[in-house]
Image (cartoon, rainbow, N blue to C red; front, side):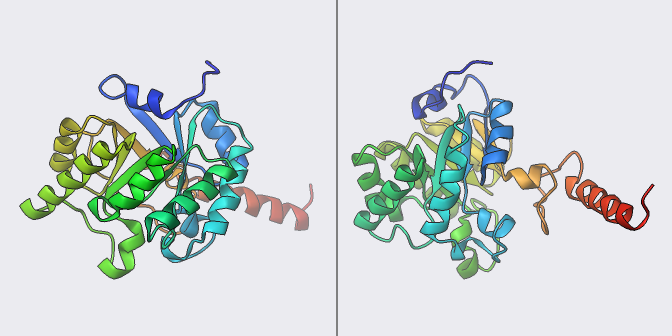
Length: 256
């Protein structure tokens, strides 16, 4: 397997050539496993709030916690590009956005992701102007789940479709190297993919994107509670793990 390291440019070069696989990583061992199969993009996602830290949503994840998990993933030295989420309320202004992004870069990330389009464009421009690679994220924004009252598919009417396309084009123009489309109506996601010159990476947005990203614990069936309907794990490894634990515990009282 090639030892060539991924960069924002190698990710961009995949557009229209080969599907882009992306997975979340929150710690050293999972990053090592993901790297073993050559996944080109590892996201240290704020989804760790739910699947690792036990929070009800991503809004309680702190920048300190993101730094901690970025360092763990970076120690694995993967060939894949390490991108880190800017957590809730850490990029309210251009100055704060750049400061927060720099902290994640110093912790070992090779780029950052933030949620939003035109509304955060000054922050995005500040980050990119400093030479920090930026991955966009539009559609359903998990950091807005509380105010929106749940996870909802976006782009289901002409107004939403127009807004999503404007966001995508603005982020591409600003210099984002790629764009996550979360829970975007599939035909709209496909249109955005055709219209922008940067790769789109979908999650619950149909097959018309340039790549797909999943929460790794959903894919493996180890997420402790809820697994989204757009993920269909081959098996629920959490059930197998519980079974192994149960056998071990039983062996203590019934030694052979």
